[in-house]
Length: 543
Image (tube, rainbow, N blue to C red; front, side, top):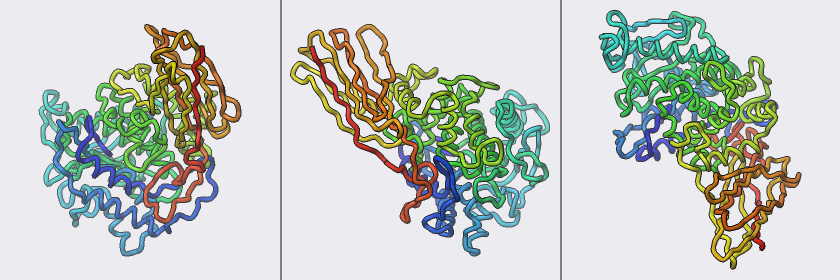
């Protein structure tokens, strides 16, 4: 799990490089999955790349963080390990033992703990305590030892004096809250592992993974392939002392994020990475509203980069894409157990082994859920673009920076017309502002739109700001060709108008990863059928 801190600095480049190669394997798609295509490059090459990615993540040096400079801390492991888990069957025999060791629980291979292992208890005595939802495992000696504090409620980790260390009690209480909330909200429970390590409950291990730059991860040690449900085990750091954040807060949001991955595995272990990470980052703030750690991801998502595709996953974009699911949660606020139901209902549509359509996943599940609510992705993207330009529309929007404009033009008596040509990638938005400049008298402004066709996802919203009034936004009715012409008063009280356009194109060539493409990019490990197209806005002031 990546855990960025406030602004961003030295480790961004390291994480971007690692993550650009970390997400290589998942074959998912829109609009519906036919037979899974043969991967290119070949399956063995993809599996070897997945193994190398995990090894690189584990072995890369971790530089000391400087919170004052806004350093990023942490590494993503969950999806890299997932990719290794679902492809290790394609590895050559000589490399399968290495993959098995990297996917092994800390309690496995007790006689051998190698430097590249993530967490390994070795010969140290392992202790275990369970509640009704999880079992927590730990050791009290060696590099993976937990804090031994056991002084009850007054210490760094509140607990009950005597018996179990406070850190374990706090972890158990946190996991109980997280797991029970997900169940009450209607999510599936994680799949049983059949009694591994003594219980059929999900297992959580405490280990010194912070020293390797990780806050936590969940993965599976079972042989899995394709779009199936899978059990998961999780590893959390043994003290959260390395990251410059209050350890209690770090443990809580990490537990919420990572255990949500275990829940996702119960729907489809091989789901699209962008929606897995975006919704796991979204749920952190839903469970622990006062921590707000996921705000640090916003500089990499659509709030700060509206021109970026919603499903892009070349580096760390999805961790900032949680804001889209926050937007949907506030637009459709029906909730159960404090969690907005729209995300749960999307995941139900992605359930390859349950109530969902086995051919529906990722973006298609989102599209279908919006259709069930009487709307569509294009309209919601355009409105999302407005919220991001006016973040006070969000409940916590005073803490968000407005999305940037693409460009601003000033209309004057000598410059009464503007023609703006542009292209916009799929699942992205862009906003242009036209201000009222000098020399204009009472007048009107006519905005002409020549966008993509409605059938491939064009949408637009125009916002008008008049002096001493709030900005007013309206969706523009488009013709089937994506065209429109609308007029507004543009008198002396008008400050500006903004045109927000959206490209809701959901057409993909799924599974067509190029021979030299070793990174996970978009939905269904494919490419958009039309990456971007030429569009135009014309503005004319008259009177």
